[in-house]
Image (cartoon, rainbow, N blue to C red):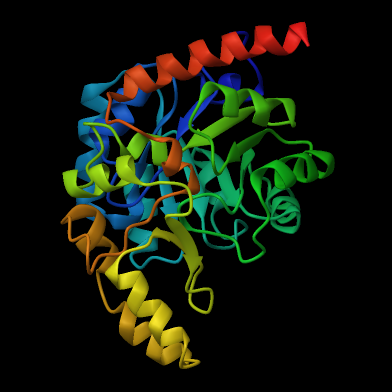
Amino acid sequence: MPSNRITELFNIEYPIIQAGMIWASGWKLASAVSNAGGLGIIGAGSMYPEVLREHIQKCKKATSKPFGVNVPMLYPDLEQIMEIIKEEKVEIVFTSAGNPKVWTKHLQEHGIKVVHVVSSVKFALKSQEAGVDAVVAEGFEAGGHNGRDETTTFTLIPMVKEQISIPLIAAGGIATGRGMLAAMILGADAVQVGSRFVATPEASSHRNFKEMVVNAKEGDTILTLKELAPVRLLKNKFYEDIRELYTKTPSKEELIDLLGRARAKKGMFEGDLEEGELEIGQISGLINDIKPAAQIVEEMLNEFETAKKEVAEL
């Protein structure tokens, strides 16, 4: 595969980036994807600062290739997390859920490449203005925290591409080589893949959750809790409780009370499939097995090349 703006920016072989997902993206998954030629990312969102440091150090030992850290900016301990990233000389940071102006220049002054995750053209332009090195444009098919506008990946990518000049990474609903080719034809320089990498032995999420992802069918996920922070999750007892509460036109406080604390940890990390928050994308309906991250990268690349030939023959 020829190099492009993203592979050159990150010094990686293939334009496949593993999303930094909470409770799934520890050092084992990140190093496995990086070793396979993509860009592995440690998800700092579910880690205390010192836990993050440990994951960065273990990742460095497990791979000599580039890897990054994803930092959701709505989390506490943000300054401490950024300090650890600088101390450990992490070269790539993906920021999300916040204003890219706050940290971009500071991180770049320390030699760190910065990518911001957006869900709209408006925020892509704000990110470019803030000086980020690239953006991830994430459609509403994606799992976890999401945009309020419900713009799909296929709509979002060409609209963002039309407006920005910096490298563009497509995310949301991409788990195959065909999906990767489609996103790149629409203008993306690379793809960010989340849900597919949850169903791997290297993902730190609970086996129960991985198996539920594999068994998920089309229509088994829903975007909800928009009054707090929109999140796509699998339908389970917790979701049914949310739905029942919505029939009573709840206040924001009542929704916060139902959500409680550590609901995502309970589901995705501890394996409570009833009471846990199980964040995953719509593409889970196309994920049918648990397999090593390196195999996923290889299969995506092979399918990408096959599909490219088929398109050329159209």
